[in-house]
Amino acid sequence: MNKNGPIIVIEDDMDDQEVLAEIFSRLEYKNEVCYFADGNKALEFINKTDVQPFLILSDINMPKINGFELRNKVFTNEELHTKCIPYLFFTTSATKKAVIDACALSVQGFFIKAGTLTALENTIRKIVEYWKECIAPGEFD
Image (cartoon, rainbow, N blue to C red; front, side, top):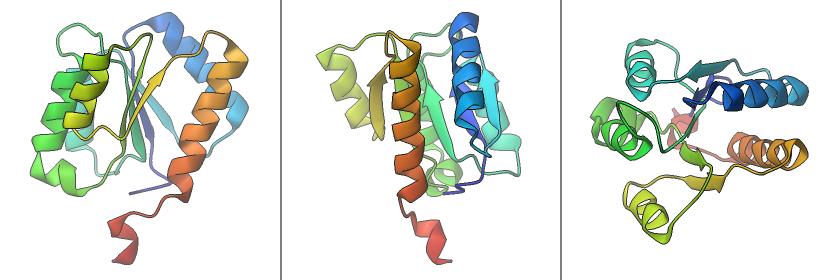
């Protein structure tokens, strides 16, 4: 896990992207934040970049390729799988089936977007701080 790598945000709603950009700006993390409105473009970036992302925050309901399909492509790609990039769902609502399906794909977190800016900022802070503290296999190389 590259704790200094970019945070990948896959969100097709531009208003949500703007809110998240404001929150990341306020939190002042050193990580670059890369936004993608399309899961395929995010996957292309993750596959082609030499920089290993720190974590992926993915919406579920997106056009072209949904969050579950994207997670499956990342999870079944041997090279990406061994990079230990935390993949988290960050969505507006949840169902029991969605959470079970996410667990089946080894998603490392399932979060519902909070209704207020303060609550959303607190959630983002907790997510990033948790993963900054977490130890991954790559730290032993």
